[in-house]
Length: 223
Image (cartoon, rainbow, N blue to C red; front, side):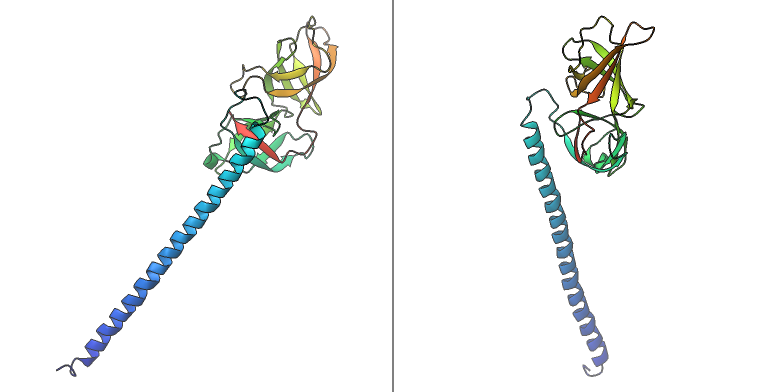
């Protein structure tokens, strides 16, 4: 009787053997996927640790409590133009928690600009040199508030400071805190030229930004 069903028995044995091999291969494949995911997680973790260490080193040199503790470090992948850029693109996007309107600072915590557009992996920056840039700033020595505008590379123009002001060449310009984009007290630039505006009660003040004269390869993004 067994001899009569020999073909069926051989077929069942072959099927069982095939299933056994497939099961081992599947487990091996699943193990490989898990291993790959673990490696990917490890790489992401190592990148995060390295970024946090760089961030601590940068912020550790500065006054505590003056700036937000929630920063992301972004690498600049393109600038336009290369010197005194009006636009930048960085390698951080919505997947990294970046949102439109966030402030962008240099590594020495001077103002670069703000985030103007965000995709999943990259973000676009409007710098303080851009013609659309208008920032509420303050003369650090006098406390007077004005509006600093871009579009006059290599300087920016500070408007609405009275002719009676005691502002002088060399004074530091900082953010006023009245803008929703920028924290108060962030260093922006230095006054390099002052002249009376024609038929106006205000001064024309040229400000040389602290960032832009050298290539910016890394920035801080925060609130």
